[in-house]
Length: 378
Image 1 (cartoon, helix red, strand yellow):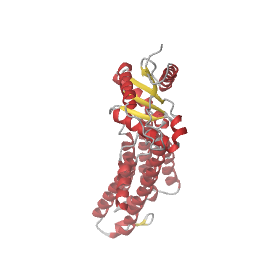
Image 2 (spheres, rainbow, N blue to C red):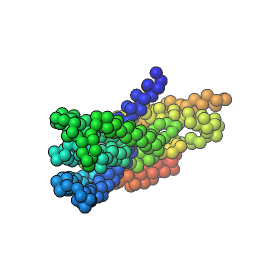
Image 3 (tube, rainbow, N blue to C red):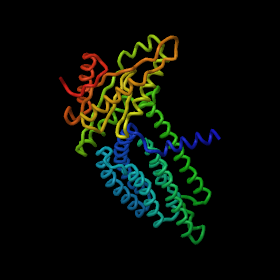
Image 4 (cartoon, rainbow, N blue to C red):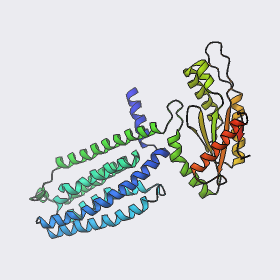
């Protein structure tokens, strides 16, 4: 029961929409795949030449050359689209479908010339494997499963069409490609499924490693790595929509005294207590990030004035919920914080400027006595 639930959770995680860090990495992977596709497509032009030089038929050579030229043309198109990172959400599925379907089309054309070539051409068939394995670079399990299932479906239909077309077993015997058998084709289908499964496991493992790198272990909040990948997209979206995006840096006041007086375990519980209060006050269009031991960031799709009201309300709410160390004679601790807010486009349109301005205002809040929120320069 426990094992089946674990498997279901892993499958759901694999097939779920990746988070922002993975999407950013996947966009880079899509560009890498596009560049690899250009190189591989160029190398495919050598295959018809090799076929011609080794005594292959002129018809097969022309089929291979035509297929290689088409693949090269599309490779350039996909490369140009991939350079516009994350502009087209469907791009990874479209390119994976192209890689798989291009292989099926070439095999289909070979079938029109020589039926055994369609099912026993090992060189062309291996392109299915390449198409599936390349999806690992996109860090998106959905793409891997999609490519694998599509390859199984298309190759299965190709098999069904060829076996339905032949009128005698002799038509599936070739001196160049050997005999086409049902058992051999089933083995290839199983191999496609195995490669899909292995690639999916690699993607899942990669996703978990990236998730750990972008998640704070204590609070399960996104961390600085997540913010570095997510913030540019949020700023870009805010600029396109013509709205403001505010960044608040929050630093807990005199927090180290809890660690000193009650111990580090109490300090960890105090951090989780603070996070619980902050989360309870956060809206759907706000993102809470843990930057350090006692420092947080809250990103809000709000102008600076509204953002100040939100942060100040959270500050007052936190003060009304003291933390109970549950150790010794230490009384419940009233936790406060200081915060500095910067907003785009007023304070800048990139993350470095917003962070710098918010940090300046945070330091100003500390100098002026702490337990306050500053959103404008003095």
